[in-house]
Image 1: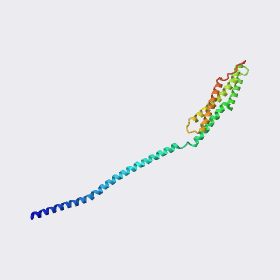
Image 2: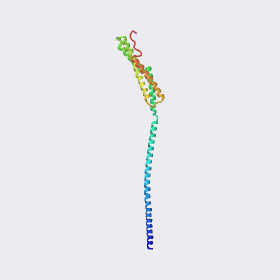
Image 3: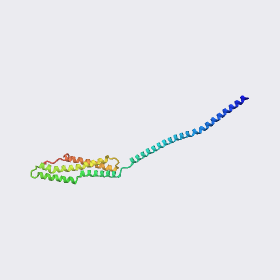
Image 4: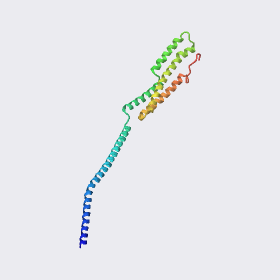
Length: 203
């Protein structure tokens, strides 16, 4: 009987020990749970922060790209368009003037004629008078017209090589280039007596 009582006490002691351990485990579990939750919350906050940072960077990059596209798509200033149109018209006008002659060329021609008359008066031969009175005047006119033609050609080419010009501006610039090139060709031929040579005495 004593053995049975001892066995029962031993069983009760074991049950009591298991109950105490279970209680301790149950008490320790709630203590560990908040720590794990806090760690998980910290990790989630870090992940959220990284994702937010990536989204902000992506949004900033998209805004910068949009701004670049807007800047590149902006039309040229109005002053640039007006300047290009004016330059094209000027080139065409200068080309036409180079073909028809200018008041400046006429003045230079008359001056050369007067100088030739003074230098050959009373002592010049017929060939010398033709060269200095008429030849120099013609050459001076051709030189002045050639300068106008060269300026017209330069301005027209400058307008054509610049981007963003309207079609009509480019058309006028092409006309100025053609007139300037033609005027330059005629002026060079006249200056070097390629088209018409000076008359000779007795002809």
